[in-house]
Length: 182
Image (cartoon, rainbow, N blue to C red; front, top):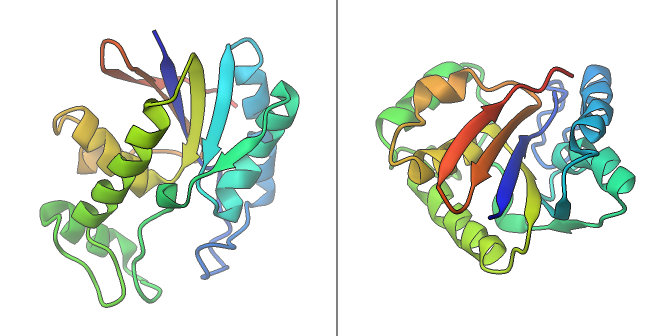
């Protein structure tokens, strides 16, 4: 039995509009350091992450604590939205209502889940033991939507925190939200 711990990145600095290099806030760094305590007694064999700065900085304290390297997987990145959006809630709701909806230079949720499933299958084809996958809220939400046959949706996505930890038991295909009280 293998368990995948999905870790949504800690709080990002939204004053930086460039998505790839947006750093964590001071509180985000604090929470990232607290995550290592959650994972210290888990039998983690490998860590995978989106290459974005906020995801790497979220899981880096845990990786250092466990003596593991972070395997960067480009397809775990967050969705491309195109240019900066001021009414992000409206845009997100549109995407959840129509998985093919996208803005110019952006990605639809169907495109996101397609690339995430490729990355997910690549990771799960080679896992032995428990692993951590660190990524982004929307990217994880559409993957969870697929893994739960639609039970994880827009409302669950809206409730995701930064950071947030979910466990997924590969053998019984159960997704569980972990109470991380960092």
